[in-house]
Image 1 (cartoon, rainbow, N blue to C red):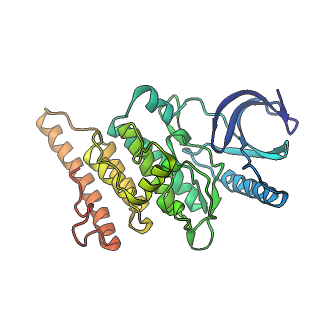
Image 2 (image 1 turned 60 degrees about the horizontal axis):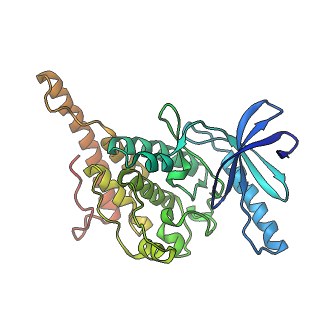
Image 3 (image 1 turned 30 degrees about the vertical axis):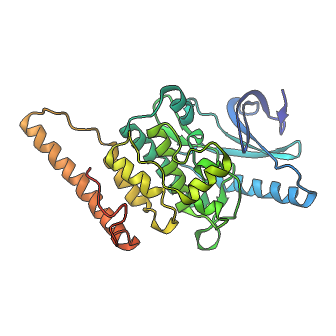
Length: 319
């Protein structure tokens, strides 16, 4: 097998997607196993555009390599080989969320909310360093043997420009791309949150929120249609997911509201019969959660204008 940069020996192809191919490799210098992403180069690029693409890919990988968070798969190196950049990452044991959904079906709302909290933490860490992920989807969420969720594949991550917007790009997975990207508008952190909402919808319902038979119909649905109501999700989870899928980035809930709602959705349901004292404690705990959620949502409703006109999300869900 090939050896990259004189130290990374490719041993096994792990997967392939629109952005490139991921390999298992052995780092012969540090004697450890790593994952390496071979970036896919768009066809028909002239020399100037190819140089721009490669330079930008390296810049994006370097930006993502500055991120350090328990819910982010760490990038260690970017090496050049065969005229393209290869991104060296941690090799995380476990399976991707999309494979789990395919093999076992939709997940319970509490588990979906737990995964959502981990991915939200990862996105906030990236956004705080000025980096957008731009390809949040179930295939890029890894679930480790201990159940921990990690966000991987910052291969098309982009530094945010002035005003919080990133470079424009057509890269990504259409079923999980925010509408503003199809409108060729600058995207920002709210675009990653839209993709998080689409990912959680898929995890809870077993299919994407805008599933269509053709790519053109899919794009039209993302731009023009509302997703079907969530049939399997709890009320709080369904409420926050639909709020994240708003067509207007300015009307999507901010991270603090998303976190409060996901925490409420992740709380296990109380047993039907409990001793009196435990029951009272459970009620107090539930009231604390709902009060905090209502306060956060109320502030967001007032600032976002969702309280006007009795819109879809004008009422706080029954947690």
